[in-house]
Image 1 (cartoon, one colour):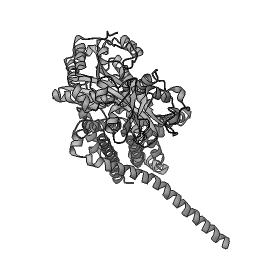
Image 2 (tube, chains in turn cyan, red):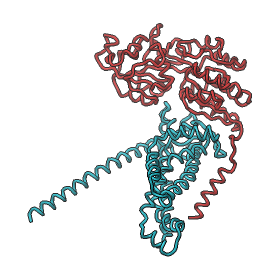
Image 3 (cartoon, rainbow over the protein chains, first blue to last red):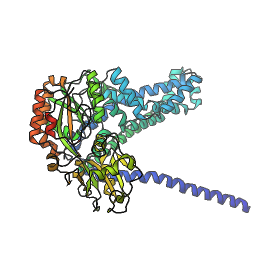
Image 4 (tube, chains in turn cyan, orange):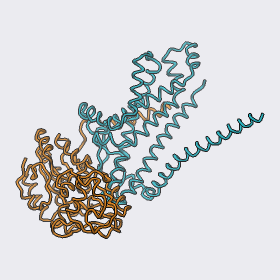
Length: 289
Length: 330
């Protein structure tokens, strides 16, 4: 009897130890992150005003704003989302539901996983050759959006496949049993069921894309631009490039601008997350099994 | 849900509706050195104000080398450069059929910095600096008293420009005597603010970077008076202008594609640049050329003086007047 009690006590000790380890691991990340955010907020919040959003960059830190940067970032992200999401989901569905499972699809799967880890500057170099020089899309918002779309495509494909895999087989079989064909099963059951997982992948992808600088500099994003784009073929700048430029300026007042721009960028990412939550919520409500 | 999707798709189509191959209106494209960027940005800002938005100016920071690559392919109208065009880049421009006009627009003074509490090294000769920075000093010259015996027996902590920057090229050329020839065991950064932090927080530090960063951080750093043969001289507008701060002051340039000058707005922009440079350069904490020099530059520009006066390599310690009177090569 005593030995059982000992074993249980030992097990509980391990339990407590693990809780402690887990908690402190979590706190390391959380504290670092909140320290960063607080630091950013202390520097940046005083600069946040309407003017900051409606002014172009300037050599005077107190007059400089992020108008061209946030408009550029928004348009680029729109292009990215609208090209990467349909392509990625379609590719994911095809690979998971339609393609035959053989060495070729295995090979493709490995390559997609590898592509997700390729440094972003490589995508920039490829886009410079393909979009700018071959397809003559210019150093434009369209080029930037497509470049970032390529960058996040592997993530969207992989997330879609994972999400589809988690759909219970019973659900598919039930649908087939009442006479659905493959497309109906995918459209009416598999996709709605896996929306949550897919959206998570999309958001992770877009959140990565919104902070990218290297590939955009490679394809020729600009630093000083004091007008708004009239079409997707116009030159542009984005938030991270504007921040980078401000951080490297000698005047300290510019560093506060950079902090404020960082806060805005974070808010934009959060807003995207919020949109994803909302869409997911709407989908959930419609599901009636 | 469907409605939301439609809204997104429609707004996307609305944005992309005027899909044209070239951007609208008069536009001047500028790219190149990040050192020259603050000056060109200031001019672009004022020029667009003066033109009330009729002309659009874009400025990028691909670096001097990256800027010339685009320039010689004919992608930009003007290239910012913190050093003269090199032989290889001249050849590229030649084969791209690009003819260019070279105009100095301001000075930058590379400033040697120490910690404010450093009392011994406030004056250094070029020889002292060479002894510290030349490649053979690597892992050998690590203490102040190895440079001069009466300096303290303390380690030297070095901070300098990263190897890709024009600042690094110029400093090594001026101090060691050969561009890109430097010891490697120092804290290198392309971001001058990192160097400022490093030097300000280290009692035994020594480093170099652009004058503007010194001006903004005077309370944290001490500038070294550099002796290039005329006694120790501190960098300032006066000593750079009269040519006594030698050999670490350098002119910075813009290069203009001659073909772009067929467009009225580019010609106007360059003239605006030269006429307003003296004032704007000072606002961004660089050092303007003497007033007479700007007139000469403007004269050279209006005469359409094509090519470079450097023949494809950097030179140290040139008077701006001599430079402007030289025959340009192409």
